[in-house]
Length: 142
Image 1 (cartoon, rainbow, N blue to C red):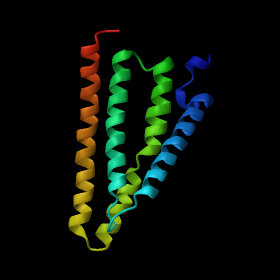
Image 2 (tube, helix red, strand yellow):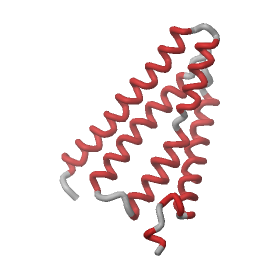
Image 3 (cartoon, rainbow, N blue to C red):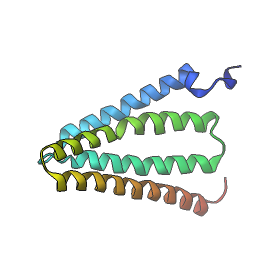
């Protein structure tokens, strides 16, 4: 009967997402504290979001090529993808940083930071997808 319950109603999966989110958020907080924003631009957050996008693309493509989203694959996706990487990346901070730059009248910096973040994030996720696909082809079918 438990297998028929949607994953968002399974307490152990909710707990895994929460644990993963706590881990990812803690890592992000340590990195952001170690390298604070420079002149209102948080290059650390930009890097975190790009690395997170790459890792998410890599993870999801790898899992999708291994089979349906169930069992261990679903658990890994929820813990690492939704939890760890969801907590690690922070597009809300990107939005807040951008808004602060724009509010301060720094339209070039604000719009450039937002655009660069989105474009690099897209390139990173496509790179992760491509790397996982290539690795799978090179490694052969399993």
